[in-house]
Image 1 (cartoon, rainbow, N blue to C red):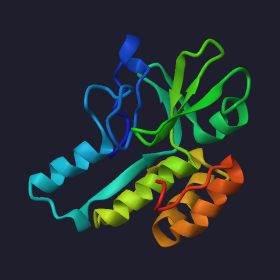
Image 2: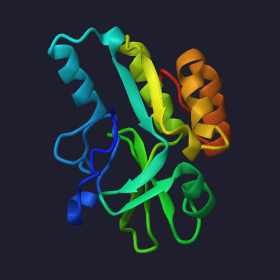
Image 3: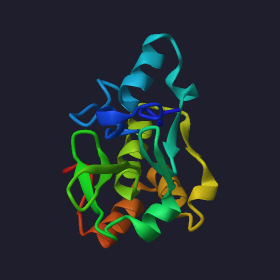
Amino acid sequence: MAYDFTAGETGANAGKHQSNLYPSSLSLGNTSVDGQIQNLISAGMPSYKILMGIPFYGRYGATETKTYDDLRKNFINKNGYQVRWDDTAKVPYLVDSRGNFAYSYDNLLSIYYKGLYVIQNCLGGIFAWQSSMDRANILTNAMSQAIRNPSLLEQLIEDNYGTKIGPTNS
């Protein structure tokens, strides 16, 4: 399980990443997916037996959880909320109209980086919690492409975000 890092948090710690690939200033302490996976490998777990979990919901600590469908329909660049990207942690997050951290979540770009991580670290694969929170299969398709055809996902990201990515600038 590589998510819910902030599930029990309130106050200032609620406004941190819930599933960041790497630590950053918005991490809860030094917690990250990479840290959790490297800990398992260091303890003797074969990398090919490790699956990385990806949340299909947004979280604000212990107090707020929204499905990806709800985030897409009502929050992502809507109703005063704006997407921010933490390039160190390789995850997006939402801020409210005052610029305050609102929700930690995953999108196509963060799943792209997580898929590359799975491949580069010879992990067993990725899974999601839970598929009913992405009824349009946007994140589900991104997970599949991240593992099977990253270049197709790169094109989809470029089309959706206007961001060119790839091995030379990722």
